[in-house]
Length: 439
Ligand code: SF4
Image 1 (cartoon, protein in one colour):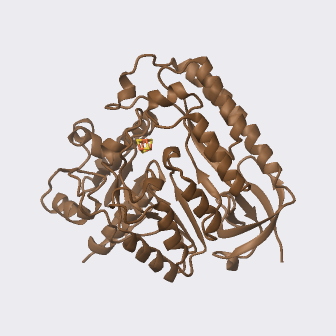
Image 2: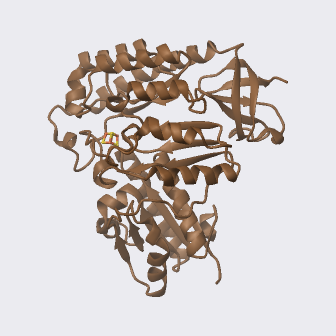
Image 3: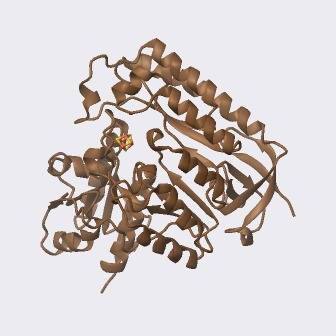
């Protein structure tokens, strides 16, 4: 069978990156495709989309506009759209962008070889967003890189935060059986991978839908035993499910890294309630204190949304106060973006764009100074990093991460890729550290 060239454009979170690895894996193994980067040479281009913010959606439709020109030059080009926008919009994508031949959902990636064959052979236009809830286990995955791998341990979310589309686009929470995850991790270890990141919209509620057979700390303990794997990370954790048992597991399991992404979103209990986040700020701060008591060196990051409907200046000031109290290593900062079908889109008290921007700038500059100070405090310290490969900005140099997830760039030979090495931090920058290899 003649191989066809496939290009994939991915938007959004790590879950989408992982799904794209699955799309590539399935189509290479079962569809006779070869993954390439050059869109001009592709016979099939798939967009794996994100609808978490309006800006992300706009990017997808502008890309589709560019692809229309490509299709004009090459009428046989097949354009497909998957991911969260596809799941939500279905047929409407084709109405808006008639150059699209295929729309597929977040939970039916395994059907892609057959869907694409139909599109090509029957010259049909297909929309298939029916979720295949019963089978979320990946079959083939074309992983990027050789040192670290992502593993999806669950799909969907039951939390229904008032601003979020995920429960609508990815369905209810469904955890994978632990033995399948363990097998996947063992296979990765055999292939030489050293670090795994467990992925889920809400990883620490893993197992709540498995009749009490296993929970997330137990899963970490199980995977900690897999020989060959040296580091375990996980993302994302919901504060309401961040338990003492999980803190204990992080402190006691040697392969689990001292790093956590624990999105607080706002520092105001009033806003928390409106967001339907199901925890109070006092409890959040208490949990972070417990974590820091057990693991003082833990890296802690968060998501912050400014300008959520109803956010008053006093709520915003509480967010600033919380950031000063916790001193996050870093944050992902967003201006609230109303998403269709979510309750918050129709809440009263939508915040004016200028105010959102002003609050965004204030938090950004506050967090930048905290991040830089924290990085500076590491100057002169000795850290273990796992060398991941060439640095993004300068492939001649190596890059790796500390256990608490700081990026470190260092000079050294490629033979160190995949190895843990000790380095001395010689200079702090805002988003990375400069290191020097120790013998
Ligand atoms: S926990 Fe909330 S923000 Fe996270 S995916 Fe679920 S609904 Fe969305």
